[in-house]
Image (cartoon, rainbow, N blue to C red; front, side, top):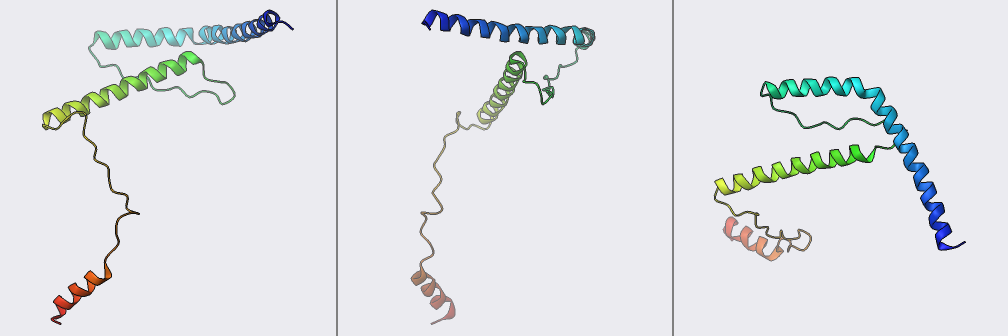
Length: 132
């Protein structure tokens, strides 16, 4: 089998997979059209009233179906935005407190390599406290 034939077979299989994904998307879009339109109207009304918009909460996916890449990507972007906001808050708090940003990390000593109590030193301490 030539490389061109193998590529043609691969592209045919990929096209069939994408067509099936698209059909599932079209069915989802048709099934949720009224709900999405109502949600859009509600969001517009909240915006008109000056209400803050909450971040999108991830929707639970049925366990027998993979999560569509568009949903995954949107949730990824929402998570990135949340991380960026948290970092901005931490940065501002550090600046307000007069601390450096980014914070300087100092390595913590490894407790397993720390020297244990010195028995000779403990004897000296006991001798001084007991008056001996």
